Length: 197
Length: 261
Image 1 (tube, each protein chain N blue to C red):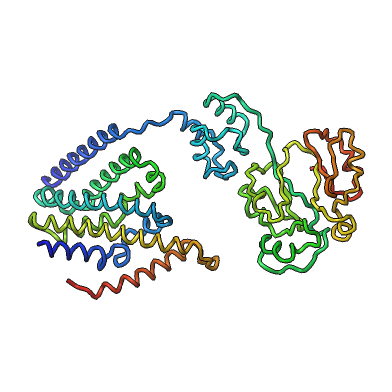
Image 2 (cartoon, each protein chain N blue to C red):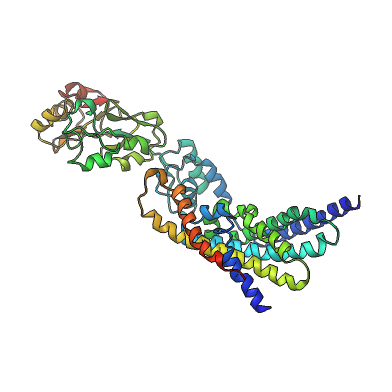
């Protein structure tokens, strides 16, 4: 059981990294990766939301949507859960860490529409459907995916920090260069794809 | 039918649950905000020009509330808004003289070129090549760094020299920073006469380099009844606090570098 969970964790972080191999959640990834400190904040915020929403949506799906035959409403129900969680997180950050709240700006409420969060919830219910034993796997999967996001955004913030001191041609300045470098990092990550567990 | 009933019921339950949960959290994590903050922010000009030295209008407003800045730090604000902010913050009302940018060169096409510059359209680059493309060391290169720096389109390069449209200037000072030659200064908006040359070179060199360069002849200094004009280091200067806009200096100037704005 433990080995299985560790494998799920490793797979979610590296092999099926949400940013670099599935290309989910690229908007905050590009938007908040200018400064490593803010990137860590964003990564942790997403990690919190994704893990809790992964657990909450799995339980909601298993004990509410399936018994009442409402599985066709899963996206709607999950967005409801995620939106509520993000709102709660926003209130929490505003009170406890105002500097991070300001640094994240619009990207904080936008976690609601971050497809990585919904993606983790939907994959969690489809890949780990069934008994409560699968619940642990789904939660670990969500947590691992979120750690993958954190890892990717912090790694890339470091890359962008270096790009700032480079002087690319004008047409490549800013987002174009960021996209190209993101592609290069993604190529590096494709090296993991040969590993199958 | 049953499906619809359960769907509506469960979503009502979930919505109610999350809603009341958030309402509870909002109470618990309520942040006390200074009620003046919103009002001060609303009174900001909203240009986010950065002339005050803060990141933008809202940072400036926060600095005002913390007492780290004073309302006269903003040049773009109109008098009524500033008065209202002073009242809100309990400060005495302050009068701030509005300043506008002024280019201390009027050479342009009338100033001789040192060489033909065909590089990137950037004043800094031209200025770093043998001191600029103009024979005069203090000449405007006319490549428009100030024009690009101005968010309000108040500066334009016309006839090879930057010129200011006074009514569009918000005194943010972006052009002052952008000019590699340091030719742009802030002068009071109500100033009528100003010197448009900053060449400290010898009269002979000025004559050779530019049709409208100040040669430091002191005619303006002698003719001014208020002692507002002084020639220092070969170039005339007008003390705008003493100037009564009589225009005698402009008439007396043999080079036409004191101009009516």
